[in-house]
Length: 213
Image 1 (cartoon, rainbow, N blue to C red):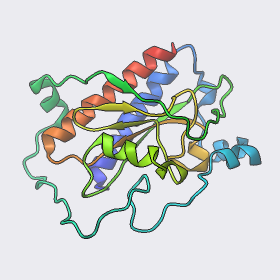
Image 2 (image 1 turned 45 degrees about the horizontal axis):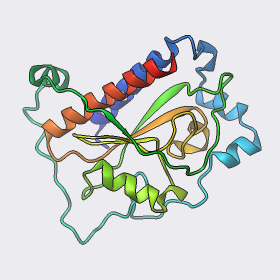
Image 3 (image 1 turned 90 degrees about the vertical axis):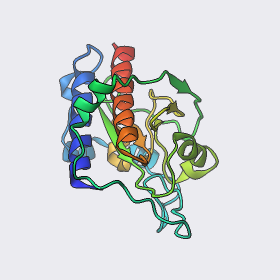
Image 4 (image 1 turned 60 degrees about the vertical axis):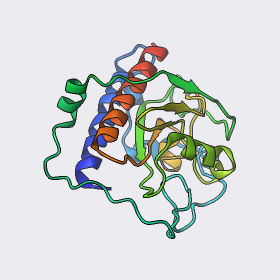
């Protein structure tokens, strides 16, 4: 992933984790370093948080095959992009309602004192020929979940929640899976769609924070 985009996503994920910690439901003690998270997991925890099938070569972040026979999507040149936050405000982008379509993939709890997640992981599919939340969700629903699944898919128009956020998901490694709510961005066709996807992520994280207070 582009370093600039990665830094941006890390920043908003950090803000989201802070939002979670600002509630009375999640305590500061639940914020752990990777080594602390690893040390706290039992063999049963690791077993629960480990996908039953490995992701194969030539697949995207959720294990969906990347069709090399299709012409690869090429992003717009970065030169001249406006500031994404200013762009969102100027265009008054609003996030849509969350569509809940919950499926029971593998159901396991978080490794926190109160059973609530202690942070948010934001993923990017990096698939050059898949652009919709629906497509990513359908791949997981139809069996792809055995190699990876997340709670929610996000595109420029949709927030599609397919796994109960009260339970963990298989998207950020066997250690992170026990601690984080996980969202998946799909590839945006242009800057406007990327900006809309970004505001949608903010919206869903804000809603999640409100829901757990």
